[in-house]
Image (cartoon, rainbow, N blue to C red):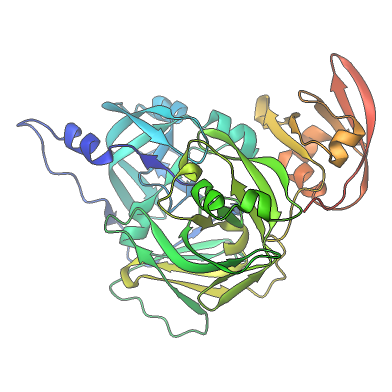
Length: 407
């Protein structure tokens, strides 16, 4: 998830303006000896970790190196009494520009390590949750990566925060050099992308642990290489992030090579967005969780490297793709109500007669609200025949959905 606070330096200076300004507290002040080990949940290839905000009970936060500032769901911030001091504009992967509040000196506790953030965004996460199908209380961003070696064992569901001053590595993993920005709010790697029928293309791909996708290619790069028309067998769809949806063309790359890593046939989101992070040209695209979650991953900004160790499990997440043509949303209490947001033309969903606004009642007799958004989407990423009961205008009907590969 790319999160960028616009004119961030000016915002920080404004918070500290005047004679009463005091130095910002150190962002990281471990209260326990390192390393710190924390259990995590992996959901939609993102890392959700338990943390306390300003002394709260444990809540779930997304861990995201792509966030230039940590953030708290605005409703959670209000409930905890986190006080807004300024306002700012924020851009995420979605196309909408967001007006947000800023708070100062907010402590986060992760496994006994206190992360005291001098500046925190108060984020409107409700729309993100509808697309994600899961609630979250905020995001921990780049300061974690700036201060720790971040060790994520996706298969074991474990996060370890290590001291960069003492960390050494003598394993057999793939070591990939990272280009880390001076402010530690971005890291990118040299890559080569090959699409069917096209010559390999060199690219700068950002490391983005907060996004669900395998390979995401930004609009300027798509335009420069005419990928939206040159890549065969693509389908129009929508990606999402903070700031809502953005249009994409889903396609399949032949492979992407990053250092000593070669990933075959990853799903590529080719951005068609006019605004938002994916319309920018700071990098050419990103490598996200659908690839990263196939590994035991160590991010070591202090030594400008990422280390990937195969986790011993068969991993198809980088090549999994929707086979239905349905773009689904979740809403209602507990995000249990699943509705159709978009129906992609010339797909099984369009052939079956789905319409925007339809509510899924059941899939093969299993209530949709017991399945949840992600499980329904996982089902529809497999080639099969489904009987889907939907509600439309107060009446229910059964639709026959026969999914098939779209890319």
